[in-house]
Length: 189
Image 1 (cartoon, one colour):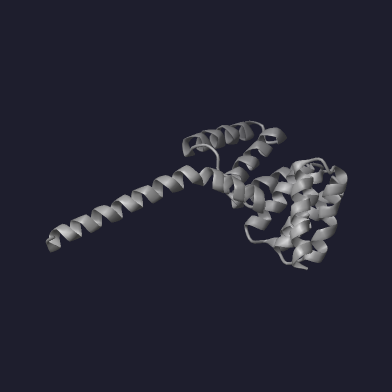
Image 2 (cartoon, helix red, strand yellow):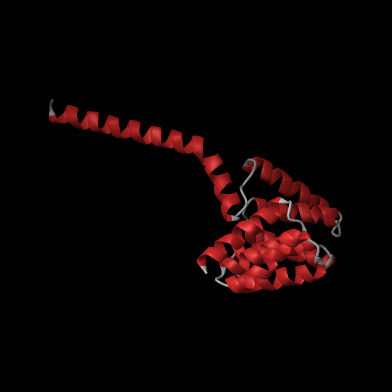
C-alpha cells in the first residue's frame, strides 16, 4: 500500500469513527441528560428551539410592558429564563416578581436556586430560608434548601430541611429526591 493510500485510508477510518461517536452521543444524550439531572438535581434542561424561546420571551415582555403588575406572566417569563438555564436573567425576573408579591414560596424557591446556579450560595440559602418561612408547607423549598446546603458542604445543616421535605409528604417525587440526597449525606458521614 502506498503512503498516499495509507493516509487516505487512515483519514477515512478516523472520519467513520467520529461520525459513529457523534451519532451515538446524539441518540443517548437526551436520556443521559435527563437521568443525570434527576439523579443529581442539577440545572434544568433547555426545552424548545431558540426561535420558540425568543417568541415566548417577546410575548411575555410585551404583556408586561402593557401590564407591569401581571404576576402570572412575570412568573412565566422568570420560569422561561430558569428553564433555559439563563440564571442571571432569571434572578432579575424573580427579584422583580418578589418586589410585587412576597408571599409565593415557588418564587423564593426558584430565585434561591437561580442564586445557587450563578455562584451565590449565601444569597441562595438566605432566600430559600426566607421562602421556607413564608411557605412552610411548600415541600419543594425544603428540598431546595437541603440541596443547596449539601452542595455547599454544609451537610449537617442540610439534613433538617431534607427531613422536613420528607415529613411533609413522603409519597412524592420531591420526598424521594430528598431521601436520596439524605442517603448520600448519611453515607458520606
